[in-house]
Length: 151
View 1 (tube, one colour):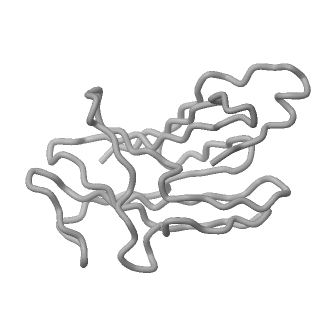
View 2 (cartoon, one colour):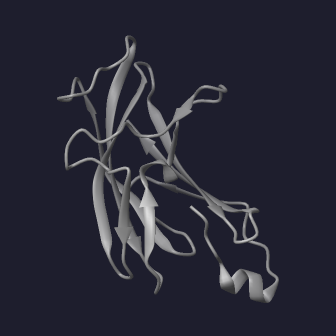
View 3 (tube, one colour):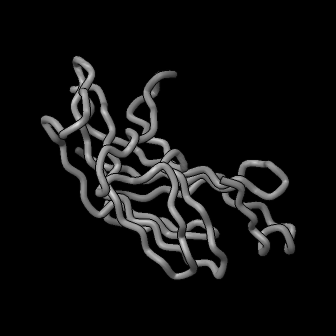
C-alpha cells in the first residue's frame, strides 16, 4: 500500500526508523492505528490444512483509520515474523470465512475494522511479531512498526 505522509514531507523531518509495542497496545502509523487485543493457539480450523510440525495462531487485528481519507487495506499489509531465519515470516492465510481478514477491505475515515488473522507457525514458536512497513509517496520506506505478541 502506498502511503503519503504530508507532515513529514513538508517539514523535511525524517520518520523514526521503527516503533515497537506489545500485545494490547495500539501502534499509531501516519494514517491508521492498529492493535492485537487477543490471540489464541488453535488445534484446527474449518477449511484450513495445517502443515506438519506447525500450530495455528489466531490474531484478532483491529485497524482504525485516523486520517481524513479513504484507504483500501490488504491482508498482506501486515507481516508475521517468528524468528531470525530467512524463512521465519509470512502473512495470514487467505480467508475461508467472514470472520477472517479479507484479501482487501475499505477503510473509511474514522472507521474501525476487526478481523482474525490465521497464521501457521512452527509448533515450538512462543512469540510473534506483527510488522507493518510504511511506504512514502516517493517509494522510500517510512517507519516500520513491530507489535510483539506472546503465545
